[in-house]
Amino acid sequence: MNPKNQSNPYQNPWPLWTHVVLFVWKLFWVLLCSWTPKFFNPWRLLVLKIFGARISGMPFVHQRARIQIPWHLTMHHRACLGERANAYSLGQAEILEGATIAQEAYLCTGTHDFHNTSFRLITDKITIGAHAFVGARAMILPGVSIGKNAVVGAHAVVTKNVQENEIVAGNPARVIGNRTE
Image 1 (cartoon, one colour):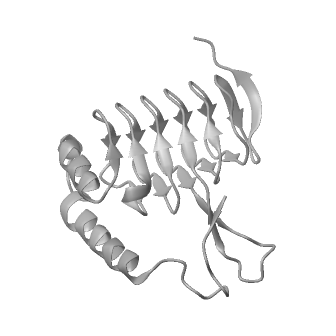
Image 2 (cartoon, rainbow, N blue to C red):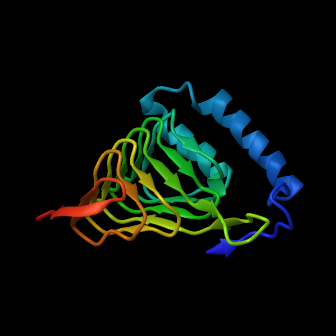
């Protein structure tokens, strides 16, 4: 976990320049990307790259996907961030080759240190393995890795790592099966 410097719960963990760049980012996304049809995906990827996202190959980012801090996002070839999927990328989020984040799924890379009186922000990387599938409205918490070919069921809340080929569901997510090749 990566704690941010905050002396009290009301202190902002981000410097002023970050707020300015994030304001410009959100403005650009709304004006240049959020209305575009699906086949404008290369344009959306270009805008993400301009704002520091690490894009390799040709992933797909839905026009209504929400990305908090683009320079914390890494997407590999044929990865998919679906409609209204939320990459709350206060920390690093990496979506490997062929992985799918379904509609309205939530990748949350930030939380708070509840043992500290300042409730300082803590971030930790989320990694979605190659060819994994995160179902609709599932929530992946900070520091979690989803293994290669794993499946996270719809509405699941994932608090721990999911191993390769595991199928998990529920709140909290529990193993309900294994995926075969």
